[in-house]
Image 1: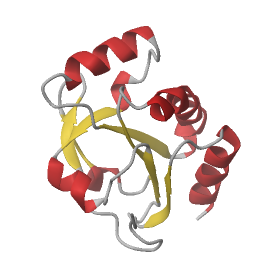
Image 2: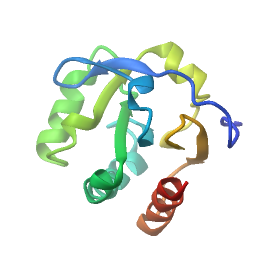
Image 3: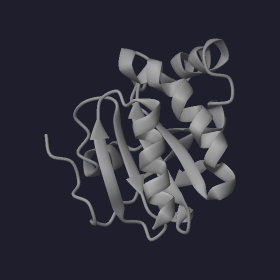
Image 4: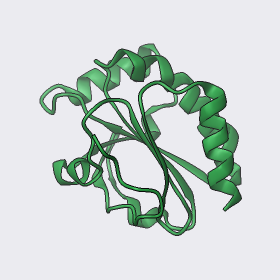
Length: 147
């Protein structure tokens, strides 16, 4: 499938945060956003998540925001994510959002994980599908922050 092209405006993404509250991507203007569509049932997503979280922590003070857009079945998503956060990746919870279907469709997500880097102006810089190495992720973050 074709993802959103580089340089295009990142669509609005809205959803409920894990732990309560709401998130809108438009509120994150001025920050580089690493937006990961993932699910607890997706093996590559699960193996990549600790790297995403550690990089998010490392680059947070440089202006990176990590949004983990969960794609688990809506009926069980909160329980599934809760168990995953507690057992596997403590600290992930504050980054998780349950996005509205329209937001997911706007990002043309077909396979998981699908990762977008969005620049400070809200433009798509890069989109990748599938498991990324930590060095590839770091390169994407640094390229985004350098703009």
